[in-house]
Length: 140
Image (spheres, rainbow, N blue to C red):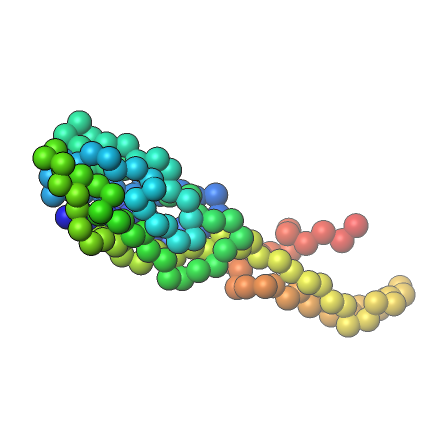
C-alpha cells in the first residue's frame, strides 16, 4: 500500500512542491510511469535508503486554473522485495493549480481630452487582484 502527500496543496505560477510517497514496505520497479498527475508534471521519484519513502518534485502546468487535481499511483507497476506486484491504486488529497497570470483591459470614458478636462479610467482584470495602486499605472 502507499500514501501520497504534497508539501503544498495550493500551487501558483513559478512554484513547485515536494510529493512524498510512503510505501508499507520496500519497493522496486517504481518510476514516474506508474504515476498519473493532473495539471502538472512530476519529476523522477527518488528513494530513501530503505526504499519505503520516495520523493519527487511537482511542477504545475503553466497557464492553468484547476481547483480539483490529484496524483494517482498505479500499484501494479510496483514490486516488493519478494517480487510481488502491488494491486489497486493510491491517490493524493486534492490540490489546486492557479498559474494563469491576470490580464487587464483599460477603457477611457472620453478619449478626446483637452486642457482642463478629466475622464474616468476603468481597468478590468481577468480575475481578482490585490496590491494595485497608482504606482502600478503609467501615463507617458
